[in-house]
Image (cartoon, rainbow, N blue to C red; front, side):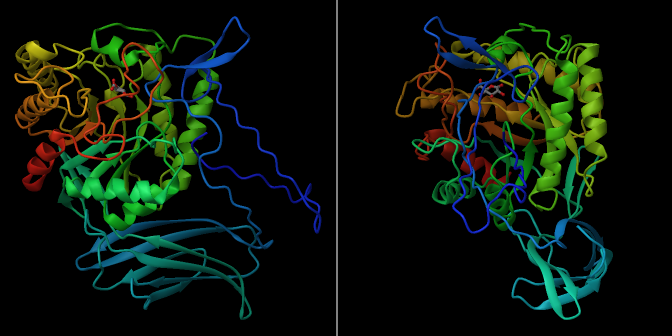
Amino acid sequence: GFLPFVIDFTETVHPGAVNHLVIKANNELSESTLPCGTVKDLQNGRRIATPYFDFFNYAGIHRSVFLVTKPKECIIDFDTNYELKGSDAEVRYKIITSQDSSRVVVTLLDAQGYQVQQAEGKENTLSVEQVHLWRVRKAYLYNLKIQIQNENEIVDEYEAKIGIRTIRIDGTKILVNEEPVYLKGFGKHEDFDLLGRAFNYSVAKRDFECMKWTNANCFRTSHYPYAEEWYSFADEEGFLIIDEVPAVGMMRSTRNFAKAGQGGFTAFFQTDTVPQLLKKHCHQVEEMIQRDKNHPSVFAFSLFNEPETTSKEAHDYFAKVFEHARSLDPQKRPLTGALEKNSAPELCQVYMLCDFICLNRYYGWYISGGAEIADAEIKFRDEMDRWAEKRLNVPFIFTEFGTDTLTGQHNLPGIMWSEEYQQEYYDMNFAVFDSYDFVQGELTWNFADFATSEGVMRVNGNKKGVFTRERQPKTSAYVLKKRWETK
Ligand code: GCB
């Protein structure tokens, strides 16, 4: 439901007549589709969705629908890969076309539209002298023009913006163009009042301006791939993206976030539907990488959010997902997934599959919140010491930490749900992060307040936003802005 699909209706369409295209959307959840959940039949005959995750399960069509006509001989796909050579670079490209009869011509244009290089063939290399690199928060985009030519006629043409940059993990560092980057930013949602999850340029623009204002450089597309426009925006703005597949809710509970925080385990990977789920999961990873592989902003793929990870079955399941994903990305980007509290250093059977480790932690909220925050810090440091003892020599990123905060709720001393407590909580978390040099990033939960299912834990949605749902700052936004100015 979060990735594009194409339906070829060449055979059924009536040329010259009025045609009706009817699309039926279904948001029923199950344990053999992603994201996971179930349905409940009420006594009055109504059927409702029961998600195993904490965001509203919108229905209907939220993304653009395009009617496309293509010539028989057409461009189907392309990918690029980069190598830096001093101040120059090589762009290796591969083009897939539907037929082989005509010439493929590829032209690289700079941001002003001047031709940099041209090459022929479906697979070749373009050399770029004095390259303008795509840098974090200082993007430079080239235009890649792909043409199929027959004699002097252009049979098909496709243009895409590309950013020349490399990504590599080296020990505990994340390197972009061989320079270390500390990730600062947010877990987000596609969510806005009245619009739900529908893509809207004004909302996206506001979100990027707010993120830039806080000095952020990264976000995670929690918990599903977003509309493609988000990625193009990030390409232009120089934001890094951890691109996440909708593998969320792999713990049989409507409140896994709270359950996990309190040590409740729910087995998941032992049921009959698991082989079906694995197939769907691999397929969605495939579709995500295929769609997003050419965006310079995408620097890593996240293959899950907070599944059950403590069993051998969980390990075997994810080993297959990672193995499949590794075969798909031409740029061989790092792979990861977000781990919740039960995925402790001694228990987790999955972290070893990840190129860098992402932790979702709520010490001071779901664990020892409020007046107990001093204990929360001790528990947090204890867990971090146990990770440190493992000497994994990989970067650790916090992909979630935060407190529900009602905007305008002020209390001294800070109590849970107040703006003062959100700041106190962040200060404690930052002190812990700064004590471990393998911590290489912090993405707070969440950028903005968002809609969820109703229930006793949520007052008209999740209020962990640093911004309100209307995208106005809570006090803690200033705390982040100040910290990230120099971090
Ligand atoms: C989590 C989940 C996220 C929830 C969050 C929370 O661990 O990954 O989807 O919204 O906790 O606020 O409880």
